Image 1: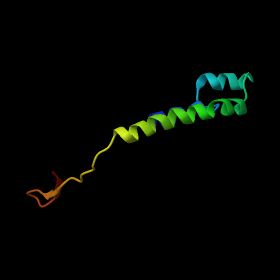
Image 2 (image 1 turned 135 degrees about the vertical axis):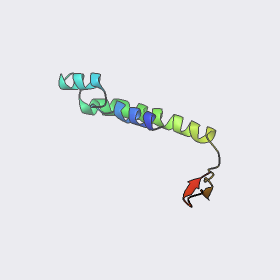
Image 3 (image 1 turned 90 degrees about the horizontal axis):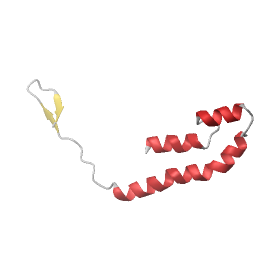
Length: 77
């Protein structure tokens, strides 16, 4: 999800992609137009997988058991 979030966040920014930077520097596109045109698409590309995975990835977190070894140092089992 971190990779999807960073890709979705970089996609709507004029500095998030090399091609977009080149077009922006060349004054062929504007930052406002990129943000306006791609923000909702980027947000959707983040939210849809997040919502789907929130239903798929369910489970219980179990803390590891802490035990002492022969030197009386704490270890995880």
